[in-house]
Length: 516
Image 1 (cartoon, rainbow, N blue to C red):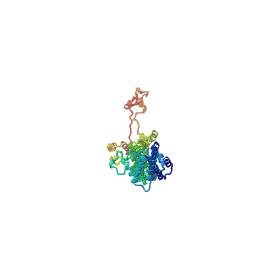
Image 2: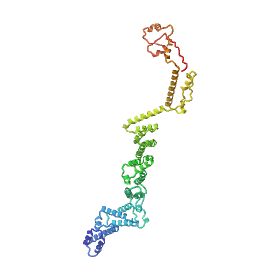
Image 3: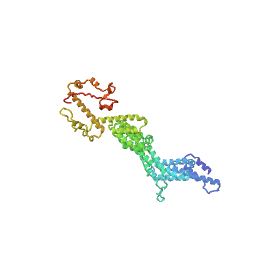
Image 4: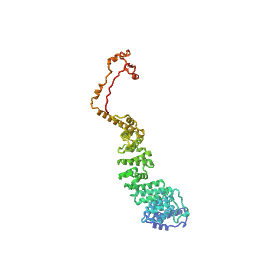
C-alpha cells in the first residue's frame, strides 16, 4: 500500500487518472487481514487518495486536468483552492458554443462536492459567490439572468421557502452586500472593455446593473455613466468609455462638448444634465451647476450673445454662487450690451464677491458705467406726450414777450414730468434757446454798434450842482471823509457807515428801442 501511494503521488502527468484508479483497485479493502495502527493509518490514506482521485476526475470532466499531486498539495491551501474554483468556472464560461443552464447547475454541484470531499478549507458560501461571479462575467445574457436567481437583489429580499425550490436547483442565495459587489465588478469590467456606446459589452454592463432592483446610489452612478456616453456621442465627442471613467476632471468633458460645436452652449439643459450624469464636482450640486454655467457664459460672450450670457448670469446670482463674479463683471463691462441697468447690477454683484485685488478695477468700471448712464440721461429727449408744446409763446406786436406768456413758460405743470433730471435738463435747454433768440433779436434791432457810447452822454448830474458843491454840503460829522457814506438803505451792510444827508439824483434818459 505504501508503494502504491508513492507511485500515484509521484506521477506529475495529468493523463494517468485511469492508471491511478487501476492501482487503487488492487489495494486491499479495510477489514481484511490483521488490524493494527499502521494498517488503519494506511487505509485512512487510501480513503484520502480516493477522494483526491474523485476531485481529479471532476476536473477532467470539465476539461481542466490536474495531476493528482496538485490536488493533494492544494487541499489545505485556501488561496490555491480559491484560484482553482475560479479557473474551473471561467473555463466553463468560455466554452463555445455556450453551455446551457443544466450544465451550469451540474458544475455547481461538482464544485460543492469538491469542497466537501477535499477542499474543506473553503466555505460553501465562497463556492456560490465564485459561481455567481462567473455567470455574471460569462458574456451571456442568459447566464446573467441565471446569476440573478442565485443572489439577493434587494436589501429587503429573503430566501424562498424550501417547498418552493425548483427541482435540481440549490436554494442558497448570495448575500445582498456580496451580490452588489459582484454586480458592480462585472458591470465595470464590461464597461471598461467596451469600445463605444454601441458595443455589446455595454448592454451586458447595463443588464448586470439592472439585476439590483432597489438601485442604490453606487448602481445609479454606474447607470448614469453609461447614459453620459450617449450624451457625449450626441455632442460629437469621440472617447473610449474607459477614458471617461478614468477622467479625474469631468468638467473637461463639458469643455470638449463646447469645442466640438461652438453653438453647443445654447443646449444648456442638456449640458447640465450631462454634468449631473458625470458627477462633475462630486456631490456638490451648487458647485457643479456654477462651474457649467460659467463655461456657458464665457462661450456666449465669445459670440456676443448677451441675452444668453445674462440669462445664465442671473441664474448664478440667484443661486449665490460667488465664484461667478468674474463672468458677471465681464458681461457688465461689455460695451456691446445695451442694457445699462443690468450691467450696473452685474458689476455691483461682482464688487460684492470679488477678491480685494479686483476692487479697484471694478470700481473704475462702475464709475465709467455710471457716467455713461448719466450722459444718456442728460441727452435723453422727452417723449412727445411730455413735451410742452401746448404752451403759448405769443409775443406783443412790438416783438416784446408779454407778461402772461412769460408766466405760462415759467410754470410748467409738474404732472407732465416724473423725472426731475429730465425736467431740469429740458427747462435748461429751453431757457438757453430763448435767451439766444432774444439776444439775437436785440442785436439785430440796434443798427449802430456804438450805441452804448452815445447812451452814456445822456447820464448827467442835476443842474446847478457840481461834485465839489456836494462835498461842501456835508456836515462836520464826516468832514475828513473817514467813514464810508451810503444811502440809509445799505446801512446794515457797512460797518460804521456815514448816512448821507444829500442824495445824488441823476436823471436818466431812457433809450427806447422799437423792438427786442
